[in-house]
Amino acid sequence: MFKTNPKTLLAGLITVGLLTPLTAQAKTPTLGWNGMGEAGFNSRTGNTVSENLNARLRVNYIQETTEYKSLLEVQYRSENNQTTSERYVIDLQADQYLNAARDFYAFVNTRGERDKFADLDSDLSFAVGLGRVLYRTDASLLKGEAGIGYQTVKFIEKDDDFDQVTGRLKLDFDHQFNETYSFVQDLLYFVGPEQYKLETNTGLRAALNSKFSVSASYKYRYNSNPGDAKKTDGETNLSLIYRF
Image 1 (cartoon, one colour):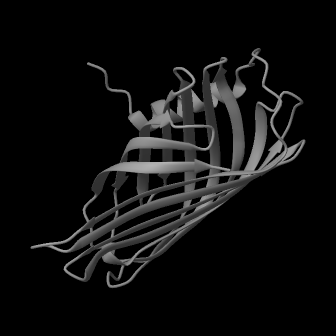
Image 2: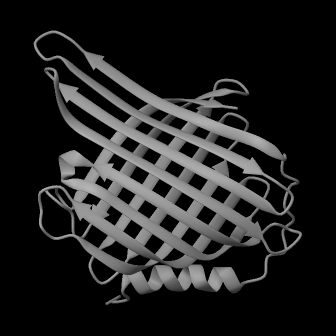
Image 3: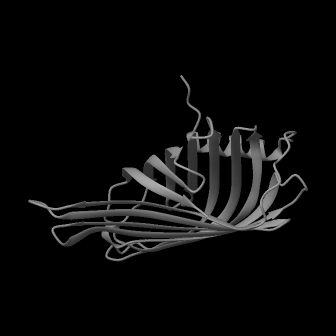
């Protein structure tokens, strides 16, 4: 029977990938600012009045040897004028490329999360590490990151705040089927003695033109030590995406 610890397997795959030479050539990136805004909104009236908003904003700044990336996520839900979910995430990262091919880099990352309906006042983390393009073709791109950091978690009601040293692993995969349809998958994993967390986003996108596209996605999250919330959470979203 296969008994390999999934934490060890994931860490091993990324570590091996970071050290494996890559021969495929990268496309020359467009320098300067670029970004992507994604939003899905649903409003319901009648016997039940409800509103759901899921929004994500990415803004990047690319230079010859460095890249700065930012992510803001907002999730809001209400029913009969009562807020039932309100979650905010901000993620900031700086990459310093270590070779001319831009497939090997060092990174510094900081991330913050607040979800008062899950009893989470703040979840702040800081990490440093290495990133690598693990696989690249004209249609596909797979990137991996491995690092070490520090995390501080404060709850609103639960009297169990903690700090811990963490390991951070990340995978990003994009595949372009043709000029219209594409598939995206990412995975983010934090592990430490007090808590480990896993988040994945899986999406299919259809381009409407050079700026707009629509997306169907599924987000899965697992937290081994949450506040006043379940350990697992999943959501399906239909969104409109704008690139700039």
